[in-house]
Amino acid sequence: MSSLEKINLENVPEHVAIIMDGNGRWARQQGHERLFGHNYGVESVREALRAAQNTGVKYLTLYAFSTENWNRPKEEVDGLMDLLVTTITNEVDELDSNNVRIQTIGDSTGLPEGCRYALMSAIERTKDNTGVTLILALNYSSRWEILNATKEIAGEIARGELSPDDITSDVFEKHLTTRSIPDPELMIRTSGEHRVSNFLLWQIAYSEFHFTEVLWPDFKEEDLYKAILDFQSRERRFGMVSEQLNK
Image (cartoon, rainbow, N blue to C red; front, top):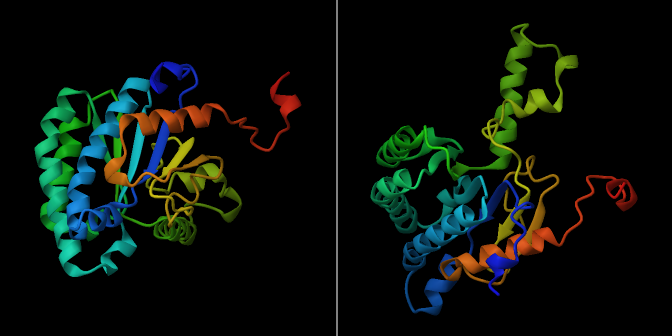
């Protein structure tokens, strides 16, 4: 029996977020530069998306480029931006035909013009699709997101549009880039690292974490199925005790 057949399709996480790590190490193992790994990682995106479609996951968020990634060597950054443009342009027809909706989180204004144009075009092209929503975290930083939300709320208070007593979790979340997206129930990180790297810090408060030694270019459908099975083995209590959940 395959891992897919073992999954309880009535208990699949609505939103899965993935930190795609290990491209550089994978490339070095093959005797190539880091960009070689990034290129091969595109196929793993396809694998993860197919697995999401097969299991009924509604939202799939991929940490594609963080604000900290600008500190990498210029050659790698330029190559990543070119790869993003090429991949989005080449994949949008198939994504659209498969009813996939594309969204983005992060500061898209900081992306190169060509990347931003390809991204916005794909978002517009797929905006009415009703299948899996593929969310690309680009030029994203959770600290940036939280600070930006705080500034927006402070501005509303200064203009008399909001009182400090009116600030609730719901109000705060409406100022996040994920305001139209449910919090991830499952967070996956590849390559054996055990940290969240400034990703969705507010949103993962009650997420289940799944860490795998698999490097991202080796990540296949089966790996996502195993992560979902791991998720289904957990008891999600949200601060309660088991007896309360089993009443």
